[in-house]
Length: 260
Image 1 (cartoon, rainbow, N blue to C red):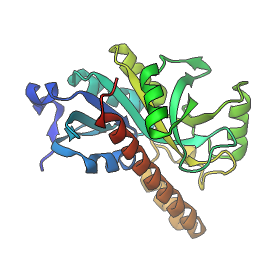
Image 2: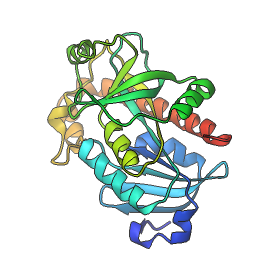
Image 3: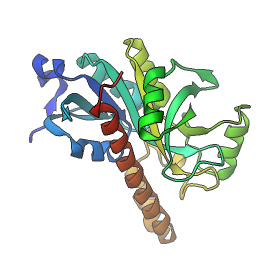
Image 4: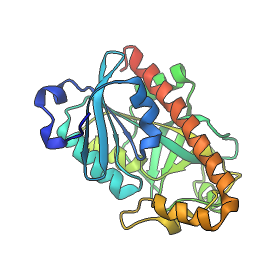
């Protein structure tokens, strides 16, 4: 199937889409796309997306590239094109509160960026996610830097002065702002890929490109130079795959019925 551009998408196809599901990385959304009946795939810059149906609901999925700037640009390009009714944000997150285990499904009750709140998720949909998917309500903290060490996560959690369930990511706040600018209700779901008690296998901040995205080529080169890292990196990829399957199931559950 040839990938179209955003400009080539027909107005009829765009009008059939009700929900946009946004992620940073393709691996975070690929299991959901596999459950869809896809009618068209397209690209625009770093944005990769596909439109189709999931259990009878018109859905467009998109991965924007990781990092705040990529998320903001990609979400804007997609939502400018599609007159969707609602937005769902999905992806992995790092645990900040000690009780969160790997794979734990979370739903954002609030989102912080630079210590300030961004527009809140749709309260009815948050309750629906908690009830129907078992997701734990949590505070999502969006940052520009990746928290790669146990110490960095502990310091970030201590700065919240909250003591509640919290997780950290890069893009939720950017996606939330894009939805709010269009007065679209949104929901944010994330699954824990790394806990508060463990460090990431690499300092990914040192392996980012000029857009803020982690450069996978640099990651591969670093791993080749330090083969002892390979088991940890493969384990992390396995966790991401499991988290992404869990997120796909949660989205399908939410869209299967009469969502708010």
